[in-house]
Length: 550
Ligand SMILES: Cc1cc2nc3c(=O)[nH]c(=O)nc-3n(C[C@H](O)[C@H](O)[C@H](O)COP(=O)(O)OP(=O)(O)OC[C@H]3O[C@@H](n4cnc5c(N)ncnc54)[C@H](O)[C@@H]3O)c2cc1C
Ligand SMILES: *[C@@H]1O[C@H](CO)[C@@H](O)[C@H](O)[C@H]1NC(C)=O
Ligand SMILES: *[C@@H]1O[C@H](CO)[C@@H](O)[C@H](O)[C@H]1NC(C)=O
Ligand SMILES: *[C@@H]1O[C@H](CO)[C@@H](O)[C@H](O)[C@H]1NC(C)=O
Ligand SMILES: *[C@@H]1O[C@H](CO)[C@@H](O)[C@H](O)[C@H]1NC(C)=O
Ligand SMILES: *[C@@H]1O[C@H](CO)[C@@H](O)[C@H](O)[C@H]1NC(C)=O
Image (cartoon, rainbow, N blue to C red; front, side):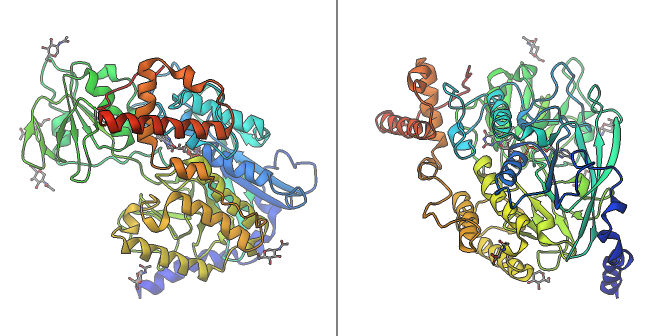
């Protein structure tokens, strides 16, 4: 009975909409497209959300399609922020850091450097400028994205200060339109009321909104009481997610617990460990304390009392001032979710799986059902109408984004490039089974490419090989992933230790001199790895601390 009721509810919008509403695009276009207002109607319209690594990748790849294929298409990229670059663009300078529950625009902090050498992070055949330090500070990465957009003529397609507020699919599994509500933000006060709002219809929606924006904040019993009971004469107690982390100096002479050992927890441990009175790092049994960080390892936090932080081994600390949560992020897409839209159901305890899901679902770690982490297999939406760029985690984003974008661009041009929905669903079920067979829960690891059956480079190669098999790309006998990327894979830490040694010796420019082409950057990394390996064979692996790069 319950199931039947649910089914009727699901079918209701289809019955009401029927055929007519999505066939008549003029009814849905409440504001004319800026570019095509007076010209002929576009033959296809595509909205991209996000101008970070992922959004720029799909924009460029669409523009790279042969001009006869994309003749008459209208492509618009919306980003709510003041420039391109996504999270690499810091919060506006000179403004106070927002306080919870308000979120900063970016998690970038002043001392952030890439944790992978920049040549491994590049879009194919577009290098960082000569003399860029190998582990570049975040400014270089934002600049790189801007340069890419400018170099390939992407900027005219980008609408900055435009926030996609809602996107609803009016149609069914075979056709329809997106009804997209856009807020044009007030440039002087982007957090205030929008300067204007409008609605547009689109045939295709490509979501590239990033997944480092909604902090995952665990809850512990007693934390409220602990926060409310700061002892007299000590700094006000706080529990803050790493998205709010900025300067380590804030923690001078404080007792700090850093939760987690991912990229954010690691950086906080290295930086805060330098200045804190004592810094503890709270870890799961699988984590290792950050090498070289001046921290005392602790197990997971169990609960709080009004006076103490109590850990799972029963030990308690009663002098903690600050807790930094390097606990990661949640996969959320507000403009596709309730109350703005019913496309994506967000439910950490969802009873559904990929075969039973009545809509797209995010359990906060995994968005499903998706074909190869890209195309929606939601029952009511055609797969090419809704796609995602940049969901995979633990990958170098830019090359991965391009591989995904190639498949999206070709599938938008010709939907027959994709297998049938049934075939894609059974491929997904097989993928989840393969991941499970390796001991991972696919609904837990989500888009983290951890399984050996789905490594980053193989995943990218498979996307492009598929396009060659179906004749969308020429058989050129080459892999998408360049041999040097495979060769340097997994060597970021080794190359990082080499670069630290170069920095300590003050010899950066000697190594960087004359390095300009993609091949020369690749060769530099390979030389550094060799240089460091032979050093470590003799001296052992150096204990790295916090390195203050210029
Ligand atoms: C602190 C930190 C350090 C990192 N360091 C590295 C590193 O060293 N090496 C590495 O390879 N990776 C690193 N990463 C991973 C990083 O996520 C990727 O490098 C990549 O840049 C992400 O790009 P993206 O385009 O997917 O998302 P984002 O960069 O987050 O871009 C998404 C864009 O979408 C926009 N947007 C979202 N919603 C809307 C909406 N409704 N309307 C309009 N616009 C919207 C946002 O404003 C944003 O500009 C790091 C991540 C973090 C958080
Ligand atoms: C939380 O703490 C309160 C008071 O100490 C206790 O009564 C309650 O059982 C605890 N809840 C959980 C889930 O541990
Ligand atoms: C904890 O502190 C709150 C006030 O912040 C107080 O109401 C409560 O009684 C305290 N609990 C204990 C066990 O002392
Ligand atoms: C550091 O903190 C302790 C305890 O809160 C305090 O007694 C001491 O004066 C502080 N030292 C400095 C240099 O601020
Ligand atoms: C679309 O793709 C299918 C399957 O790959 C192919 O057979 C067909 O020729 C393509 N159509 C066009 C117009 O390229
Ligand atoms: C999903 O759940 C259904 C019912 O619980 C089950 O029969 C099916 O095998 C599951 N599918 C996957 C892919 O786990």
